[in-house]
Length: 594
Image (cartoon, rainbow, N blue to C red):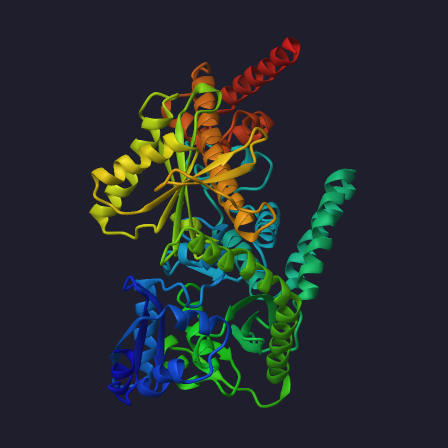
């Protein structure tokens, strides 16, 4: 059947979709010539990860397009739709921090993620920065040096920042427009690459504090200056045209591709991104697709520097930006730097990657065989918690193809009696999979419950009511709370698993992860509940202020560590003083009890 179908594929551009025994799309690719590309999987000498993918293929489908560029766009759209397990997965799908400058109605600076920013005319983005810590450090320093607006909303009167000279009192004072313009000019010049402005400003403040004999404040600013200089010195390159550009290169070894992107902003390298993935198709197609997928979630700069063998025309057309292949000079040196970084990153981690593959993907496949399952792509694992006898909750974590899929995690407040594990499991399983049926979302191949026969029966009873055929197993712990046994839900027999095996460590990891996730949720609810009860004792704190304090601090401990000045940013100073006194007296009382 498959052999006959291969003969009918046209010699046209398009996208192809590989499907497994459940008709699930496990890989999406694109090709200039569909016939040659798809046939190469079944007639060529495939190895490694590609061979593993092909071994699961029982069918394929394809969609033809008019051009290769259309095939690229179609491939990206289908990857979004199907989320195939063998396609490139970018690390945590992360975005990088930027510094966002907001000019109107009042000047403000904050750290933002690129996708969270609503791109309006009065907001400017600078970055990406090497990490969130560096971005926050710079924003905090600029806020200390310049009187920007720092509080949220519009208070009726000036706050603490005005009194310490770090705000112009935008809420109630008339602000000098010339002073505003000068401050904005300085800040924007620094963010665009003029380091001298900020350094001079810090030195001016250090001298002022020193003359006032405030050596502690001067020393603190000196440390900030040293940090900024280290960050800026590491960023120097020899480009002086101040064009925002990214530099992209790649390196292939042992069937693994390493792609390195250097972020160059205002003539400086401000950071970089490296991803590694298994080669499943043509190397150039894979890297081209990676680049297009990367910029779906990241800022597209004015210029990309890339290797000459990549498809510059398609990349430029789809991303609507200039793509350059440097032949010599400083830009070529930057490209060589990116290539060397890609090579070093892969060489350093290639053993780790292979070990991780063995521990996760291969262990997942061994578990599939152990349970006599045809397919095991997704595992949902549940745990219940009624720690300290209050706030009964459940948590669910998801592992896809041996790795945690954290965006799929879910937490549940439980309505049944806190000590009723059987009905707790029934409630949570019903809520989870009834919703999956209504929304037609992805179902698991295996459900793992934390416990023995009782938990398994509770889960299976709900699945039977919903007419769902999903394998269920239980994970039991020993007296030392370590993963001990795997119970098959079909036979209720215990399956022996060697303690030193990858499968045993894999199951332990899943059980530890769901336990950690559930306990963390339980503690969060408990802390918020205790804060709410505590705040009810303070005059001047109503429901709105209580909500703001809980959102800001999250626990009694963190709120107790806050100063009166910090608390005054949310509640009136008099109320903040009363709250601080109450927390201190509470701590003394607890200490005396001990």
